[in-house]
Every structure is written in C-alpha cells, then in structure tokens.
Length: 374
Image (cartoon, rainbow, N blue to C red; front, side, top):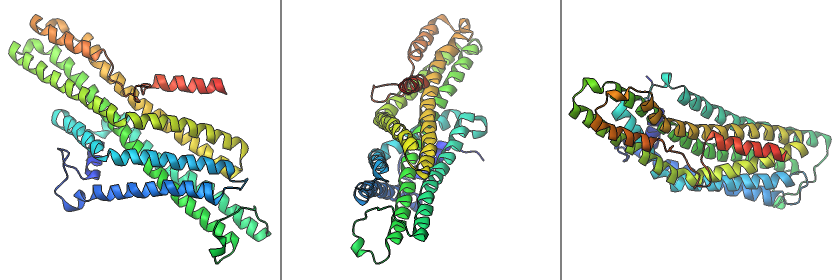
C-alpha cells in the first residue's frame, strides 16, 4: 500500500491526526527520544568546534579545514537548535496539512506523484552521500597516517593531552580521526533530516493547492447541473478550503522563514569555502569537498524548487478558473468566483523572513551572481 509520505512523518513523531500525542506508549515516547537525539547533535556541533579549533590550532595542514569544520559545527548547532525549538509546531503543521488532504482528497498515492517520489529518492541519496563523503575524506586521512607510520615520518601535528595518552602519537591521531568522522556523519545527518522534513512539508502543501485547482474547474463546469443553493454551498466550502491552505502557508512562513534564511546563507558560505579548499588542499579534502558541494547545491535547488511549486500551484487556481466555462455559473455567484481569482492571483510564496522568496527565480539570480564573481 502507498501511504502519504507526510503521514509516515506524523507516525514517526508519534502524533495522531489531531496533532496530539498518540495513546500508543511506544510511539508517544518517540518524540521525547527524538528530542534527546537533538541534544546529542548539539553536543556534536560543540565537539566539532572544540576539535577543529583546539586540537589543531597550529597545524598548517588543518588550518583552513579547522575553520571550515568549525563553521560546519556552528551550522549544525543553529539548525538543530531551531528544530528543537519548533519540534511541536513542525509536527502540528505537518499533521494538519496531512489531515486536510486525507479529509478532502484521501491518502496520497506516491505512484501518481512524481514530485514526491523524487523528493523521497533525494532524501535517501543525500543520506548516502553524507556518509560516503565523510568516509572518503577520513579514509584518505587514515591511509595517510598508516603510510606515515610505516615510513617513520610525521606531519608535525600538535595534539593536546598527549601526556595522558598511553599509546604512540600515530595511534592517537587515528583515534582522533575516527572520532571526527563519527561526529561529522551524525551531525550532518541531523541537519539534513531537518531540511528533508521542511522540504516535504512545502511540497505537500503545494500538492494540496494543485488538488484545489482541479476541484474548482469541476465545480464551475458542472454548475449548470446543480441547483443554485447547492452550487453556492459548494463554493462556500471551497473558499473555506482555500483559506485553510492560505493559513497553512502563513504558518509555514513563520515556522521555516528563519530556517530557510540561515540555510541559504550558510550554504553560500559552505560552497565558497569548499571551493577554496578544493583548489588549495590535499586530494582527500578536495574529494570530500567536491562531493559536499554537489550535495549542498542539489539540496538548495530542491528546497527552492519545492518553494517554486508552491508559488506556481497557488496561482494555478486563477488560471484554471480562466480556462473553465465560467459562463455556466449563475450571475449571483460570479462575485464569489471573482473573489477567488483575486486572492489566487497573489502567489502564496515561502519567504525567508521577507528577505527573498524561495523559488527558482531567486535561485537563478543568486547563481548568476556567483558566476559573475568567478
């Protein structure tokens, strides 16, 4: 069976259809466990900063990478803090959007929704690339340390607390590298999980607007087969549905506006820093950063594409009415139709704290500015 993707997320967070905690004891405790994981990710972010700025403060080999990974640690702290702060609002909004679709259009069939299937595969692909890129980078470091061990050479890397380390310096370096690799995989996974949930929510709201656009065409084309009162009632219900989706979009902006803004700014900085590392650092670092740039760019495009679909589908309602046989509607009801057109002509966009709208036009503008700088 194909269930709504958002329904799976709702079940994942242990909420019922009304946004309340499920009565099932195992599921109801899952949200609490998830919040503990968020606190762990915060500790991981702090550990990244500590390791990169304190463990390697004077090493020439790790100087640039130290600052870069410290920035990544700060990024994970900011994102996970926002996610931890808004966890209840996020799950409540997802639940209400899911309930809207189920009550009006039934469960979402992923076989007929290519957009959601793409997002689903994208999430799986991103999780793979997170682990793959971190593994490749630190596998290179690991091989380098093994070669240095057998060749009897050293990178003159300085480590704190070496007096308390009972083994050789090479063993200590291997331990630190494996530990950093473990931290990066977990921390990045937590950050990407937040972005996946945000993208799914925006995409699912865009699908609801698309469903609403198809519904209004049917109402107008079959209005001559219904009585005046029946058509009036159906239009009133339609307006209520439209207002619900508009309210969802407002909640989406208030909930994810700061997250999208910080994500965009941080992603821009990450891309610039990764590009510099690719040009100036070792092969293992360059390989990891090349994969990281691809992952970051693709994720930015997907989030902006989801926002673009929301903008496009929200305006589709007025376009659908214009392509329908509006002459069939009673003159007394055309005022309601014109009101729907007027509201729909204003696109319902995802905004990053009113700094910019999240759509492909903004993404293209930023990309062109990057190319001009190059």
